[in-house]
Image 1: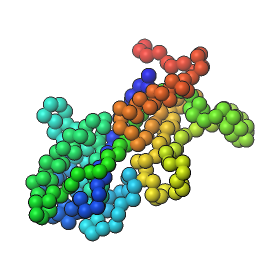
Image 2: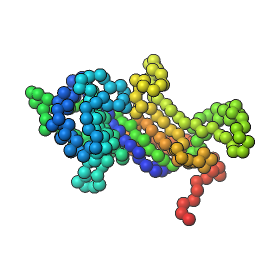
Image 3: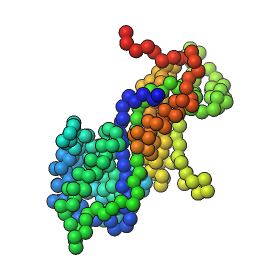
Length: 254
């Protein structure tokens, strides 16, 4: 079973049809201040939000950015909010915890904004037509990094590289960087700033700071909620588990 070390972040994008987010009203000082105070955001202002789940449409006002806040829990500890971005057709919420915490932030945000009207009784936020998730986890997997790709690729790369310094053994450390895409659709290409958006990309790699020879801590990012993400990693571990007797897990305790 994949063992969670940390849920680094969980994000959710609420996507809307045209004209269901009233940025002109969001730009009013009273509205921005109400949101900032409700969540104690350390950063707040009107600006173009970063492209996360896809490109941000150019409009005026450009969007709203709120970062580093908290949601006081009536039945538990505070929930830490990394960011809330309001785009022309998307609201993105990211928390430093599981995806289940996003629901409370979203509900509270709607409550705050429902105190204001966009004219003729229309809300600032309408109803989203689609919801998309993303999460980042650090996990322990009983998997060799080299098992992420075909053995022939590993051996070919290591043979081509040859001896490096005559002392340490150099091994290939694969990192998966993948995108799910319709098989009959034209692929837009994989490069910074393309239309895919970083939170639509699947990544699985050895965690930075791990020793390659003994490392079994992995960083994983995927367009999944945190619970589904962990279930996916458990399937990966079952499929690619280390051979018996090879680099076994260290004993716990001393």
